[in-house]
Image 1 (cartoon, rainbow, N blue to C red):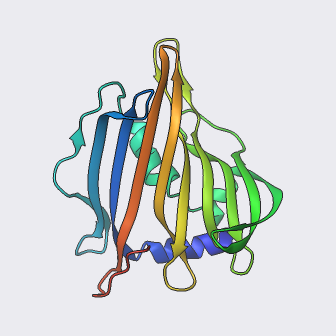
Image 2 (image 1 turned 60 degrees about the vertical axis):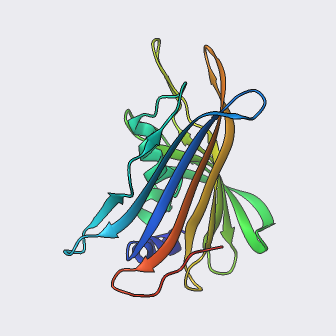
Image 3 (image 1 turned 45 degrees about the vertical axis):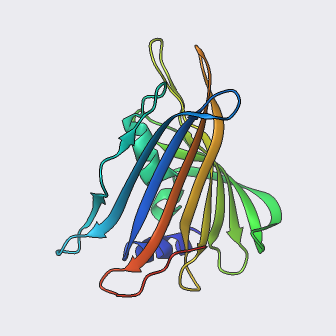
Length: 212
């Protein structure tokens, strides 16, 4: 699985795509009372270096939540996690059975970090791996650690990331969503997170691919 993930990351690194992030603060009845939205194109420079380009200005109308460096790092690294060979040694895995997920027969694995040092971010949860080609089909879990000190709290929602096949072999993230209540000392705050990854197009190619 990790070998296939390394191949997938190498392939995905040849693609440009658009990432749209929406975060809603919800009240007790599920109505939005604050929101954040940003759109970025992940592109290449003329020197074929990976870079990001903001599409317009981010809209931040959040009233109660403060987005941190860890939140943005999770959006870029943890929610679309690719569990490559060089990352796998950071994790413990346990086999949890077999299950069909999104019409694909899968192995189910539980994943958690072996240890967490200060400043590190990891994924903890479940992954579904295609039995035939060893592609990750889905992840469900959270970014860890939750960060609590005597003065501050930096909490993160449980999320699901869905992948779809790109070229018949490699599965790329297409959608992340979360609907969770963050339990702060001052009270719970429900949050809804949505990340769409779309308009995949290979660098230097004219054709595009938008997963459905």
